[in-house]
Length: 114
Image (cartoon, rainbow, N blue to C red; front, side, top):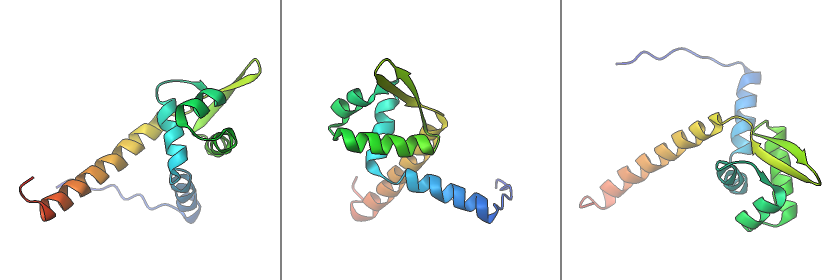
């Protein structure tokens, strides 16, 4: 049995964690992060790749930028966005792993032959 490290967070720390999860709870933001995993892209490239409207892409990128999940760099008349910290993908992989595990357990209950 592995021992768990006791990491009680303060109220302010819990609020910061909740704020980050709230930012990551929007599927369009996750889609943009997924597109940026391949490398930096401009707003126009993200609009084209995502199928979202330019105003929505810009709004979601501003939220991701304010949350320090993406960084931006001006390139002529365009702004190129990229992931600020690749650690966000480790978090997404953990969540996706949990979802896959839960789905597998549910499938085993309802379809034991699988």
